Length: 388
Image (cartoon, rainbow, N blue to C red; front, side, top):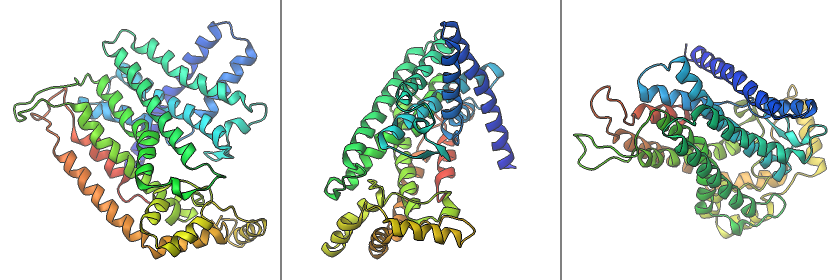
């Protein structure tokens, strides 16, 4: 039943995108853009925006319904969906440019946009157009709203924060320049918070709060001090986003392709992940030497051939064999007890987040204009102990 409901929610959200996309293309055409450019822009939107999980965008709609305590009207749904697709456009802008910076090969099971024939470095301008589309939509749908400037400032601020995180990531862990001295758990936390947590977790909820006219401060009879709901939300959602990324890092090491839907590559790609940073914090001098010599080392051609043979012998499934260097790193991870350390971390953060959520004062039953615990429990419920 739950999966059917989710499929229906996704279908409705995707249906809203069709109208939003047409609106963007109609405006583009009205500016006198030639047919070739119209087709290019349409392909950019179709290829890069709607293909992901859509969790970020749909969270705007879901959070709005929780805050209002009811289903949205058709008019409200369109507005909330515009904000949700604004988040998805922002995500697309980040991914198209990120793939170019990282020289990535595939994204969402297809070639990265810049690797599509004839695209190349034009992808950089295409990424700018994806970002600019957000502000076009906000102008059309929210210019008359009292919180219009707040929406603009929120998108701009979160974009800047994400770009800060991307910079730290790029200079800390360049793929072909391995130096584990640049790594630390503190650096990892900073990268994750700025590069992922703000736009993936705080932004969708803050947009829903603005849409539902949650004020920046309010008082309740049960609370002696004024409540700052956006700060309360941020204090929960940023650690929640960090937990999500730590979980992703751990699954890259511990999960098998059949479980997580991909081959883990963080070790060979020199990623500044939670796993390597935790290992560095606990490694003996001998273990540290192994990590220094093997982390970020690409598999040899012979090892790649072996991986292909292993895949052919297992009904074509990728087995995640990436070479002896990776195996040596994984052995150190096992020796320092990375699985046990992750389990302790997960239970600790789950307890801490639940305490913060339970401390949210919702006022009287059914009270409007206040923060609701359900927003955060639904996020946490989807993440806790996930396996993919």
